[in-house]
Image (tube, rainbow, N blue to C red; front, top):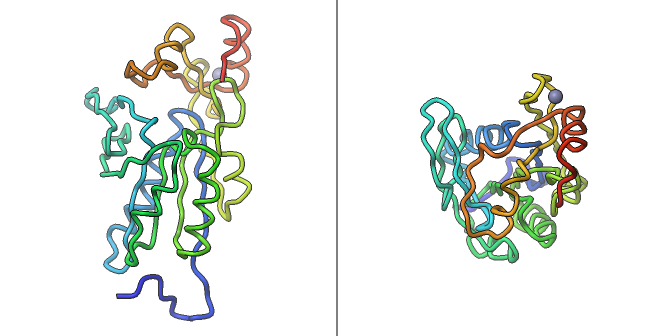
Length: 219
Ligand SMILES: [Zn+2]
């Protein structure tokens, strides 16, 4: 079967959707909701990709169970989806996994990738005519643009920014991720698997207060 045959041959498929936000904002749930609908279809076929640098432990909220994210995407709501790992600094590897029946690609934890991911996403949308969904943190813990995300946000036809509940004050406008500075070094050496409980979703006001109290965070 030929993939991506539109009913009207003049209508061209292929676009980029970005779902961004801070920790605990529900980015993955939203991205996987979109992919789950595709997986129910006999016509459309989706693949999920995750960079190897994004491996971590996710705690399932209902059971408190810790799940390693190697070769999978795990949501705190308990959803577990098979994913293909690719080198964070060589996203072109993704293209090698594409087959004609693929209609949709989801790239999770996209912030960890090099800027080459932008060109790869454009290639998939424009030459492979795929629906490309990209999910990731828009900001680093230092509140700056994270990896290729700002460029992808500019390139996207559809852009959604998810918000979290501030873990400090309860505001529903939490847009920033705070990492406990005492464990930051463990994250940076890449050897120690750090669970997600060291991260906090905070609003801009609490972020400013935490920064004043504990010092700024390095990217
Ligand atoms: Zn707050």
